[in-house]
Image (cartoon, rainbow, N blue to C red; front, side):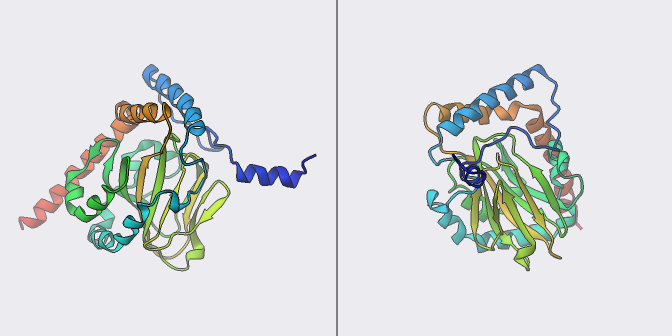
Length: 274
């Protein structure tokens, strides 16, 4: 007979991904096409769990992805470009301003973003501001998104899960204020505290939350990439991620970003012409 304590240990060693998070409302996308797409996604998620090449840990061992070492070696070059971006930090968009679905976990301006790429969309104006960052990102197999994620003091993202387990997420610490004990990210039962120049890879399809209770801004390079899968899950995953660009929440985000970008660089051009 297995004791309660042993059962708890087994659950922690073999966590189960959940399709929803208590307290977070699901996406409200009423179109028939979107409802069908989400049903296919739920089926694909079960396949991805069964056919993962790298297992399904909440936080991955970096040794599983040897290319993380080359990313970490370049962190200072990325930091230089980030510092230039932060010179106009107050003008950067909040995450929920680009992706309305994020409004379920954040509705203020204390979680900002500077997007280079996402789901086939490329912000060439932003990329031109950060050419070394973009060069480094090309070393990440299956790159999907690349964003500077800027978390202001006191910000806490409540427990939630990502929309799909066919991707993994990398955070590269760029600005990590002290004391480090006052900031971090919990993924399922594991807690990680960012460190400048260090990468962490995790599966955001597990419940996770993040916080910055220090007095200073925290910034990471936030990257999503395709999860390594066996056939046929790898083929289905590739297809779904390419089809995602046609879903309302991705298209809406792209449109919102283009509108922000137009305003932001119009100001840049006006400043140059003074």
